[in-house]
Amino acid sequence: MNPLKKLYYKSRIFLRNQYYKSNKIEDTCPDRTALFICIKLLKIEDSLLLIAPVSGDKYIYNERLNIFVSLFGTSGTIVEKNYSHEICLTRKDWDKLEKIFSSEMEKRTKKIEYKVKKGVKDSLSNIYNKIESALNSVVLN
Image (cartoon, rainbow, N blue to C red):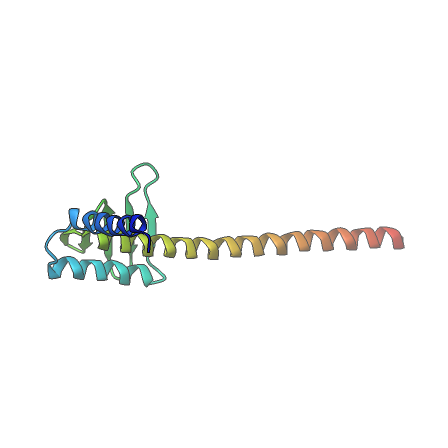
């Protein structure tokens, strides 16, 4: 391998590791548990996913479980009934959570888009059939 290429790859790996370590807080159990709580809530179909348009904060709300999660930056809050828990995620965990959130949001958006397009197609088909039947009745008379 070319020495310049080798140096390039080593520097990329070093910088990537520094990026993830720069925001690394102690890998404590409650924060990892909070990450898994968020991931589980994202996988539940009846959880409501929201993104604030200006700030980009992400919210997860599950009415059945009565849990509300607000995520901003690498920190957030999990609220269950009367209890509130502050969480702080590592950069790596935040990137993972953000990727899962975005993919789940995209999947749900595509599902809604498909339903709307199907409804429009059916509606247009009904209108076309009404016009055809009206034309046929005029031609026959």
